[in-house]
Image (cartoon, rainbow, N blue to C red; front, side):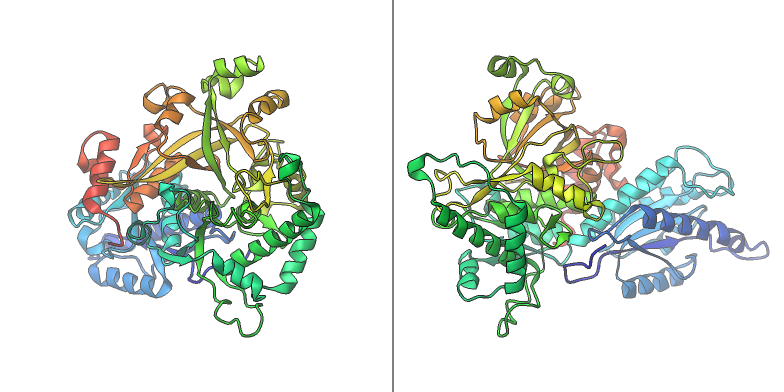
Length: 597
């Protein structure tokens, strides 16, 4: 596990065991104390054993000092939780309770309620009552209720309840982790790309984040004036020379950089990455007199403009982008950063969502080309098989360098399957496999006149993956689209033929969607044709249901997804906004609006 790079504690989950307040001759309350606290303890254990913060530590969970039967105990719990930094509350009960007296009334907490499905006491009645109170007061809460009736003395959490509890917990921790952190844009708008036109209202009102901006010249200033950690730079350069092998130079002879220019470019891009890390989170080891620069910007995510003013003159940012997005560098394994190429702020946010839900490194890529089965056969003679055939083709995901090296597919799990691991599971052999699979080709001097290097690898192995994008639409606001699918492992000769039709010096991933036969998911072509921007954020695993839950917390409607309806989990109040799930989502998000407005 690692120390957090960010200022501010991680969010705490607070569990509120509510209870029937009646005592009297039969002591109703006393008869329920053990069962009620047992539910709280079971939920606490489930969260602690299955949910981690991004630094690898298990989430912190506390339980109210007493069960909550009346408003005085609800107030005492709120006071306890406020002092403990609780951002997320889960109310649990096996019985009837006094709904509006015992509910969480804090408008800033993310709320869930678990009502026990048993016949002895009406836990379901309380659940329905308190969710109605939440809806009436404009405080949305997730309702959790098991499918099957349990015995009164049951202590095991049913599997369907576990799924909902963990989905709520993961999404709530992700949402609360962003609060008070920064998005750092280094530079500004890249070649007219809409996503790099930063929208402060979106970050501030929907995510609870702030915007920090520095001009790219700050990197040059720090290089020129020696405002970086000299020892770290020397270590980083030595590591780079040992582990980052230079690839082929695609440029014609007359346009190539000299060996001396390439050597200088290596020194430049390594120093550039050291400085970018300092900009994100500060560095206490900067030279004396640089106390201001040592503080950093408390950035949980960021982006680098690069093109074109920078890359027309200086070496590109691909080395920093690729390695910062990876789960290791010269310091060994460490939590990955989120650094969006071309300062595409909205794709950076999508990458951040993915990382917070999975604790894994992320791919930033152009959604470049749709390849139909017919086009592949015409170009290569190859008949698509497996997932690519099922998806009726695939998409070519490729960009000059911001894809994490972890995505090469050479890291394996215990069964030999390709995987992207959380950083704390990465071994030295895993790091070596990623570095061995990657070469660093001199930059295409047509795109990048200042030179530099681009990471190059082919994603090998079939991995479950989810591609995500946030867009802002005038009149609607932010929306999210996602597609669950798989990376595709084509024969090398097939990959080479179609890869060479674009840029053969960039990291390459073939991706095919999981089809539903409806809407945008009738074929890979329909996914491409309905994608809302030129970029996508790609993560390991099928996390669409978790993303939908997270977006409901943030009041961001989901406009495109291939998640089964039975897996969609949103606050209970969404059911009051119509019968169709998509319409519910749009109407509820509009009605409630962003949490931080």
